Length: 499
Ligand SMILES: *[C@@H]1O[C@H](CO)[C@@H](O)[C@H](O)[C@H]1NC(C)=O
Ligand SMILES: *[C@@H]1O[C@H](CO)[C@@H](O)[C@H](O)[C@H]1NC(C)=O
Ligand SMILES: *[C@@H]1O[C@H](CO)[C@@H](O)[C@H](O)[C@H]1NC(C)=O
Ligand SMILES: *[C@@H]1O[C@H](CO)[C@@H](O)[C@H](O)[C@H]1NC(C)=O
Ligand SMILES: *[C@@H]1O[C@H](CO)[C@@H](O)[C@H](O)[C@H]1NC(C)=O
Ligand SMILES: *[C@@H]1O[C@H](CO)[C@@H](O)[C@H](O)[C@H]1NC(C)=O
Ligand SMILES: *[C@@H]1O[C@H](CO)[C@@H](O)[C@H](O)[C@H]1NC(C)=O
Ligand SMILES: *[C@@H]1O[C@H](CO)[C@@H](O)[C@H](O)[C@H]1NC(C)=O
Ligand SMILES: *[C@@H]1O[C@H](CO)[C@@H](O)[C@H](O)[C@H]1NC(C)=O
Ligand SMILES: [Zn+2]
Picture 1 (cartoon, helix red, strand yellow):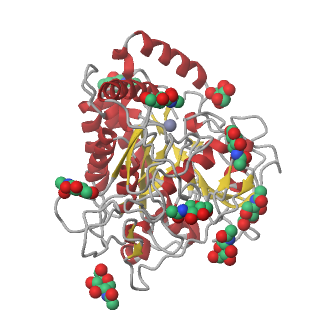
Picture 2 (cartoon, rainbow, N blue to C red; picture 1 turned 135 degrees about the vertical axis):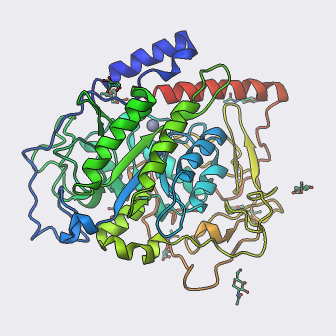
Picture 3 (cartoon, rainbow, N blue to C red; picture 1 turned 90 degrees about the vertical axis):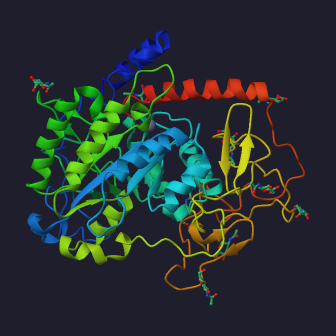
């Protein structure tokens, strides 16, 4: 991948020169090769599922590929903002699962520019929220990773045990990055790339990496041993000229070209070993911005491709966590509809609570219930308390701007409730049956990535504060702020160039 830094630098320079080049080639890590390391070895007699899984081109459980569900993983990366959220929803809306449930996807969220109320909504709709650092940096420092998780928990209300996945910005990770996410209690990484010869099913890192040895020492025999931590390889789309396209494939050719590439690669998966098929995007490239070229064509190409995939039998659009649930207990496609992790029942809650859902079917999610938190360089909505000062990677969850017990206080998600049932205003878990009961048993979020927190995870920063400041900006600076954020968001997206 790894002409990346050059690509990024070049693209950013061009973008600064003229915003109209936002559609610069993105997500074409031409350096991807079939890098299955000769050093990888794994004995399936020793590495036993579900705790351990050897990397393999074959589906787990000895299943015949013809009976295996064809999983499709749609992943979106970077900040969640209103427009980007709509784009991501449109992708998922292009397909349905065979059991009638909506297609699901995973959002690798970077915190800068993210609106936390939308994080909540993405999760409440049955999708997955994963960690993509705070400020979107390559080879991220530990605090960038832990701070992201803390904020997703504190302001997005995602149970920390449900934040299980990590993807490195720019797919730029090292041996140390993988060790760090294991240390911080993540269940999987999805930053490694696959072409054809190494198009592995997800596997655990007990025996190291079997893909993508791009960084020194990554695949040195015995260097990496992370028992029970999964790698979900990103499967590239090999184009007509044999270049593996990984992310934002739609930027790399005409709509007809891209559709044809997806079709060719799809046939290889669907009629082959049925390894999961990936659609990896940055919604920003498919979203229209004032003053930039119309991006609808990209979105239309992708929704059309997704709809075509969905028209085949036994095709399931899943989150990475659903995929791993299946990996740990593989069942034939005929039994998938009834698995607990494939269900889609919205909680029945008699009043509107701030949980990311339209509980009372008024046509509005969390009507009049979210807090607006406004700071000098960011603003967001949340079902939880606004912090008194702007959150940063070094201080992700500052003390809140209201005192515990005061009328406007929002109670943090406890370890004993899933957020779709949690009323942060009423301090009440509205789940009253064993089917919705939840107990978070994940390890406390690691502070700065080096030591375990002294709290049990959800209390940091939600304690009281005497400060009443909510950092309200003036109307004028608000406008400047908004424009600034839009441009910055585009920059951030462009600079993604592959992340
Ligand atoms: C990976 O990220 C680090 C830190 O940001 C940077 O120094 C390095 O150049 C990046 N490597 C690539 C290949 O982009
Ligand atoms: C795009 O499609 C055209 C027409 O089929 C074809 O000639 C061309 O080789 C394709 N380009 C790539 C890069 O696949
Ligand atoms: C449990 O919750 C449901 C949905 O909110 C409600 O209809 C039901 O009355 C509750 N049952 C009890 C015993 O509280
Ligand atoms: C929203 O809630 C506030 C109190 O928190 C209330 O004053 C206001 O009237 C509400 N607005 C609407 C549209 O319900
Ligand atoms: C944020 O804005 C306030 C007032 O608008 C100002 O007093 C404060 O210094 C600013 N903080 C930063 C970090 O720029
Ligand atoms: C966390 O890291 C920041 C700088 O990245 C530092 O200022 C802060 O003191 C650290 N906190 C702890 C608890 O180590
Ligand atoms: C705020 O916290 C302090 C120290 O924990 C405590 O003494 C005080 O009573 C708390 N205030 C409120 C309003 O809960
Ligand atoms: C953090 O806690 C987990 C589980 O409680 C433990 O396995 C891990 O070693 C701890 N890490 C540190 C640095 O204390
Ligand atoms: C964390 O939770 C465990 C079990 O719920 C409890 O025994 C322990 O005292 C808690 N620790 C802290 C620091 O709250
Ligand atoms: Zn990214």
